[in-house]
Each structure stands twice: as structure tokens, then as C-alpha cells.
Image 1 (tube, rainbow, N blue to C red):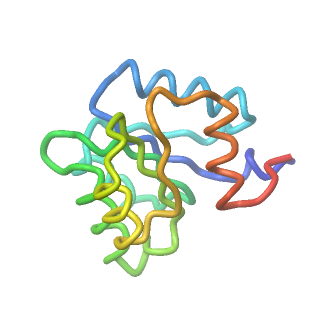
Image 2 (cartoon, helix red, strand yellow):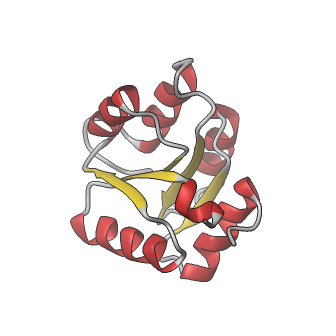
Length: 129
């Protein structure tokens, strides 16, 4: 069993298309345990009920944005060790710095390629195969 097959991934994005693209990319990389949430509040509810190893969250979402979700995940003893990758279409240095301050493991720019996503995940977990 590859490392990718063992990692439980939570995708959090308010755009259905983005969730489908992320899920498809993760499946192509060998991930099998993928859950999706439509906003940060729903994402945190899922993390509280069933902690995942990796959260890939969009930054810009209603209710609770990606940084709010990152802060909530890092503040909870049960979820604080989860790897967290922020997705953003904004090449905003301040956002990247804020994400790093809050404990993001990586920031991935939209639109992403499967290779860039793989590199972002492997930077956190090591080789997936």
C-alpha cells in the first residue's frame, strides 16, 4: 500500500468545480480516502468528527475562509497535527505570510497542475510512492 493510499484528505472549497478538480488530481496521485466540504465551517465539523491527515483548503470562501479554518484546525488538540495546504488564486505575499504564521504547511497557487500538487504534498509527507 502506497503512502497516498493511507493518507485521509479533506478538500475544502466553496466551488464545486474546484472540489472535483482537486479530487480528480488526488485520485490520479493514488489517494483513495478523500472527503469534501463546501466551506470552512463544514470542513471544521468534519475534522472534529473524523480527523484527516491532510487538509487542502481554498482561501477565499464564505462563512469561514481558509485562514479561519487553518486557525481552527491548529487550535484544536485533536486536529492540530494535520498537514494543511492553502489554495489561492491570489499571488498575495501578505496572505502567504499570514498562512505561514498560522501554521500552513504549504501554499498552492490556482490554477494548479497535478505535478505542483504532488510537489506540495510531498514537501509535507515525503515521496508518495
